[in-house]
Length: 368
Ligand SMILES: Nc1ncnc2c1ncn2[C@@H]1O[C@H](COP(=O)(O)OP(=O)(O)OP(=O)(O)O)[C@@H](O)[C@H]1O
Ligand SMILES: [Mg+2]
Image (cartoon, rainbow, N blue to C red; front, side, top):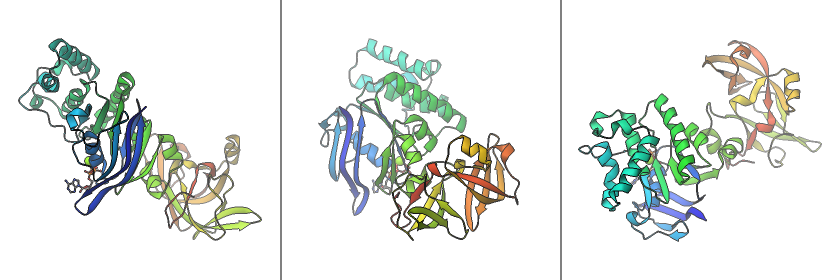
């Protein structure tokens, strides 16, 4: 049974279409991360699932039931909003029980739910405080708690960690992962943070300008991005886009990189057969360059090609060093181990792991 199914969904505000033919489904127990730049329609999509926004056309099904015309309270969904508004005059306990009071949940059941969730979120010691007496991170956890005391069909989270500092964010990320494992419920989770999406999700939906660009497992999104937008959006530092042209000789295709004099055979690259002379963009992630010690490349059984790289600048981050470089006339960012990093000004051979590279059509921006 699919837990959530969105078909041919469109949403317009006046003449502006903000969601364009969205198709997306989630199996029971899935964790769907919804990512994309600001304004791409993530919150709108979540509000539509919750029934807080109307649909222009299309269908939303929850556990196989069409809910287009069902009121939010009848959809059995728990939602944590982007701005987690807690009732300021109520204690944490009252904030969390309020919804259950409204639904006439028996007192004993309420107390049991509070105990369970407070322990999970480690807020037992805060239950009698008011929101004003809590830190931002604690408030965020209470907002989560308010949703988690319920046992709904679907959880919707709209950037629930956005107001936390980096350290707490990472801690809460682990908590949410545990939480999803424990409660096993279907969750749709909006985030700006692609690391959060990669680590939490069973599947990631990447949106851009109201269009769902790709919906797949974190690994597939990272390894085989459907287009230039997804390739550039997921991964940090960004994927390098090297422009070139296909040269076919004797049935073998290569890419001649513009302004470099370098030709890279496309043998190992996961792509179709590009036409001779076709303009292409070769996408190479920063970690798929490695200093070209041939033995090493061979040992790993990789199809790797060495190219001369000139280092412009280095940014040591501790665990790894980020190199700003150029290959002929084209810029590239490379990540390597600190003790392998050449000095700025040096030119050194780097091997490109072609089996991990992607090829795109610069016109359609689609993966080839
Ligand atoms: N009530 C509204 N009337 C008109 N336009 C709206 C309304 N609500 C949202 N929009 C527009 O719809 C688009 C999508 O907004 P939405 O809030 O879904 O984006 P988002 O992806 O959640 O962005 P963010 O990451 O900044 O939260 C935006 O261009 C926004 O300006
Ligand atoms: Mg939003």
